[in-house]
Image (tube, rainbow, N blue to C red; front, side, top):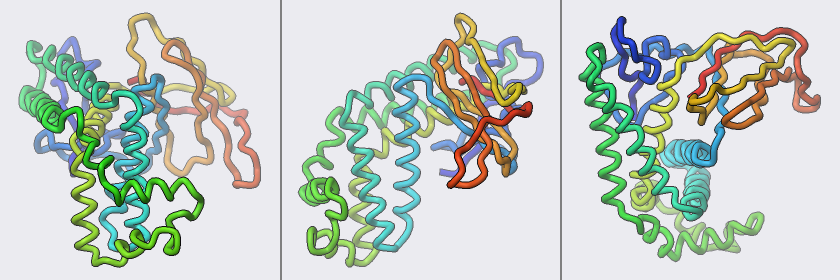
Length: 296
């Protein structure tokens, strides 16, 4: 899924705050589908920390984390990687089985499409990229609709996955003597295991791909601002009417500091803690800290 960058408005537009702009390239992340021929300029010396401020964003971020982990391990021929892939798939199933995540993704797709369509009337918008992004989101919505509401049923009906899930509740419960069928499957050639894994992942791919694309767009919609945390502390009150669902803190790579974020959609606090070793408790720094803040 290679791609970076997004729509950028040309100078002079009076409404560019909602659109990704060239200034945001430092915080770019891969998108599920390409949005045109764009050169990547992401800076490797930047580290970003994120904090979701509502339940939908928490679920989306957890799914993104697990899905990327699943795809990464699924490329490795090691039987340990196949174990990790199955474990991650079961974690994703657990999240998708709670509440109506599919409905949340569908609503977010509709919202983002409507937001982007509003920019079509602006004279300074790059229409090519705008149309590509809208087309990508429409494709994601179409794939999600095609999957249907029973998209998880093939996974739930799998006796093999059910047996692994049942034994996974026990520490070490999937070892060879507890679950010989699992060990036998892990001994199969990678091509055989890969075929099964692709079959299982196919059920959740439309939803997970849509989540990745939505998070990419949400991140790119916010312009990072330079901020100073006085004595390691920064507090922010969200203005009335300001949409705040996800916070991103940008810092120089290799810093000994990391942010601890707490709060809600109305007010949040960022404390910068200094890390030394795993044996020593991180303490709030007493010096002023410059950082980048994106309110998405």
